[in-house]
Length: 402
Image (cartoon, rainbow, N blue to C red; front, top):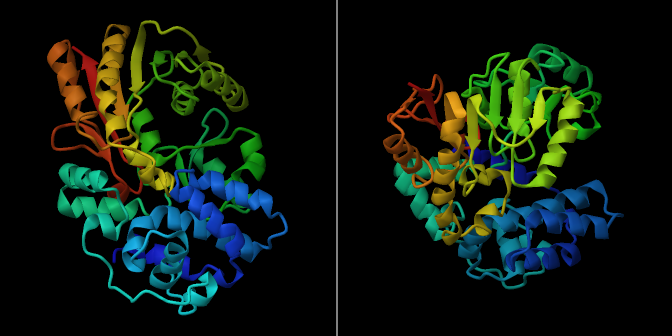
């Protein structure tokens, strides 16, 4: 086992499984196995049993999330896809509980089996994802990536430098009882080391001193290299995490043009910008800008560790339409970029990453690709990965106009 699996097993063995309520856990697990999101079922189950004590809540959450994530490996151990037996296998074969049968109401226990060797069984992956990881990362990289996405990603914060420095934020958080360490690569990043932090309850959060943002996402925003006084177009702004980051890079001197087809998300951005004192953000129609960021819609395979059952709710067919959309977005962005154009995704698929970028270069010789200063690939693109950089997986291409 690697370090990620060691930490997973250690966490599961620390769960107070004796406090588990089967009458709550089993129906929720059955709904997850039928396609409901695990996070929704956790929330639903906790709301329906507000009298649960802390051990009971912890056991219920770990049971639902654990079976949601590990269902394929658990079926291998249990010899069955039935919810009760999957839960039993979670307790016996991963959490090491000798009393798993009694805790789960299983009288006839299936025989023990050693850990499976095939990648898909060992790390509980759909076949198509297992094959894709091997294709993109090679056998060793695929195994390391698969293991990494079975563990929850760290909570990473970006100091809002419109309000404070990273060092000042770290001091404020320490005073509020939250410990952090400096992010390894992102210049404004802090990684939270306090277990299960309540970020919303912090005075520094209410004051807009930070945003929760994965370090890889922060690195993608840094590739734009925004300078005070410039105009930056965030073409796919969404709820605005990178727009806020770019505004901080500008120090509110210049403009960030935030655009997205989803008006509801842009409304959330406006509220977030007011809280962060990001006065240079304009929600507006795209226009010519010094630098353009295309943080494109994608299959989002780089963020799988953020949801324990996300791998089971994605399909190979659904990813097929993204490259055409991504190419169209780059075509829209190209004439608007006076100096720099950055294309980014949070996926691994070459069809959405290198292939899109190379097709754009062939059609637009007026743009010259730039080598990233951090996380460069052998082809001159940007790529960060959870098992190498402890980030979500991001890809980017950087071009400057000749």
